[in-house]
Amino acid sequence: MKTSINFKAVKSDSEIHNFRKKTFDYIRKELTPKNEYWQEDKISDRTLKIEAYCKQKSGRKLQSNAMPIREAVVVIKEDTTMKDLHDLAQKLQQELGIQIFQIAIHKDEGHWEKESKEWKPNYHAHLVADWQDPKTGKTLKHQSFHYSKMQDLAAECLGMERGTAGSIGRLEAVEFKIQKKEEELKTLERKVQQMTAELGSGKFRELISKDSNFFGNQRINLDKTAENFGNVFKLYNAERIKSNDELETLKKLNTELGAEIKDLKKEISDLKSKNATLLTNPDIFALEKKKYFGSVINLLEKSIRQHWFEYPQADRFDKDFLHGEMNSICKELSLNSHIPFSAFEAIFQVVELATDLFALLSIGGRNNELDEIPIQIKKKKRRRIS
Image 1 (cartoon, one colour):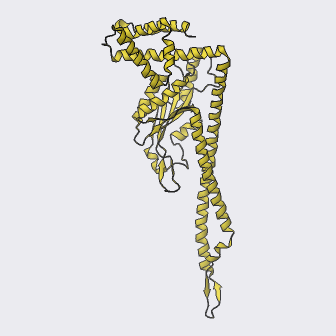
Image 2 (cartoon, one colour; image 1 turned 30 degrees about the horizontal axis):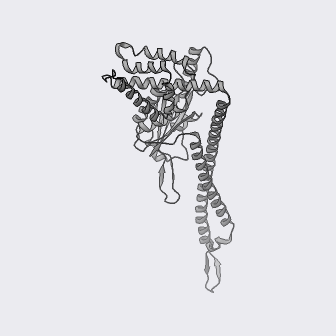
Image 3 (spheres, one colour; image 1 turned 90 degrees about the horizontal axis):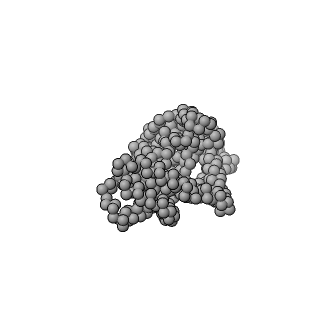
């Protein structure tokens, strides 16, 4: 089973939906007790904290177009626990600085299969996150490979397969969902039209009950006929109300999916525009390249330090062993974080930077030198990577 995680700006009614503060017509109420909830803060309280901290750190108000609180829907399994999601939250904070302060597990949503009449549950969880950088007070900035890393962390912590990443893939999935819902909508509309037509047709003449008197003449049995019509109209009315409710639900869902399509198309358009700018503007390309390499180098430093602490007794006086160890670290990081290996090759072409990174792997945390080395390396890197 595959999982996926995608953060978007939090909605105004998020807490009402997530914590089931009112009933919804698309859930099974008898399954709602299986839901689980956890929160550290209310969204309104966390927003005030974020605004105050931004003012404290930068001396300026939080920008009006900032998205300091975001929400992700995560696909889970039936046996996914709150602990699993807390583990994921911890990883997101450690690896990407994302602070989760609300979690809601939903096991009461899904749909009935039209043919088999079987219930197909939609197990998922909502993660509401503080998107503020604790160092600067501004909103977090992530590179494309960080969003790929989110998918890796979700799959790892939840024990599931990694879903397909990318805005285009999500767009196609949403468009497919809309297509299916529109087909259901048309089927229901045809059903309502058919029922309306039948009510106005002569089909109900058979409901008229007639009796023969002593002379063989037929007359309408008013009581029996009224009873027949009453029973049939009750059934039709119940079916019509049910169909109309389903129509309204589908129309609402289509509207929501349409809005999601619009957001995804804008996201893709922005990415295409950014790519075009990068290709035509050498200054912006150089700046983005510098940011990207800076992020990769920071991630590589963390991996080197973590590796050293896991294997502190390794014989790193052997030059060949040291080079092989560094190569393994880069390959693993390239695979797990979806970073092109060519990026590491470019980094190690800078002689002084390569020397610093090998020094970090060699001496590790001995004599408290670990805390100083990353700072020295970062200062040099900013001058060289361009």
